[in-house]
Length: 344
Image 1 (tube, rainbow, N blue to C red):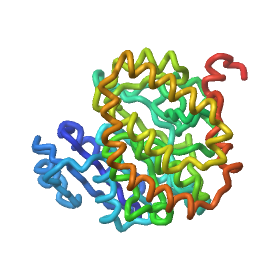
Image 2: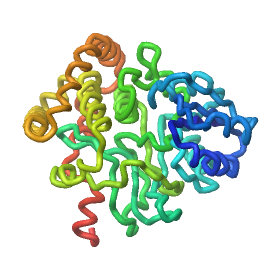
Image 3: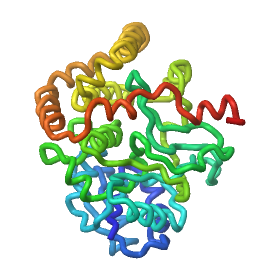
Image 4: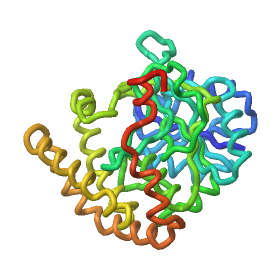
């Protein structure tokens, strides 16, 4: 069985088509768990009325993406767990193909298909990539690989990746249980953003695999838009499209994630790229976005718990710093190389 957890916050208009697409999947052995984070827009009532077989949890407060995901995982009965945003459109055989591939290799903890951008304004799919897995640069900037690029055939090969995006990942329940820290599958201190990256890093440290599988296809609306973020200049140009809320939590959670998961061996191996990026970010914030410095106050509050989590992770990890460098020391995405030289 697969347990499909739909996490909602004020997306009532997307819920009916989203759940209908789940019900139209060719893979039949599934349960649907709907978690609403106090939307107060009638979302819960709609799901309860239209889909009585769906397990609906209507929270009286917003527990964030991580909190809602953990609620769903604890209720789930399936051997596999899929966490979905309502703005995801699955093709009919997406789940069937992903689970069939995971059944072939018991070390696959997480899988993603080829996820394209969905154009909600014109209500149509596009040929533009949303994500083909996560990619980590040496300075620990982690991106949705391929995002913003047109698919010209360069995304057709299956491969192991650093991790998978939180838009519609499928996880092996056994792996989630294995990497759980202090009773949490996804870090509850994050609230929003980077939980999927943090979980992906932990899978690697504990010896699990994450896989990009292009035979399975889905589409994602992505509220922030599909943004190219391969270079520092692209990051700079696109920051105006992000809200202060997104910038605040992304900044805070990135540092907490590195504190928890970075080994001393990998840190010293990439010290100069990591330190250089922090200096660059600090200078940018100082002159352009000083309001984000407030994130340090919350980081200090969360530091004791983060250190406890780090202690557990580092004590129980199963791979060496040398093995981890394969995933943490990327210089340039192979897809960006293809963009510059399509003949490669």
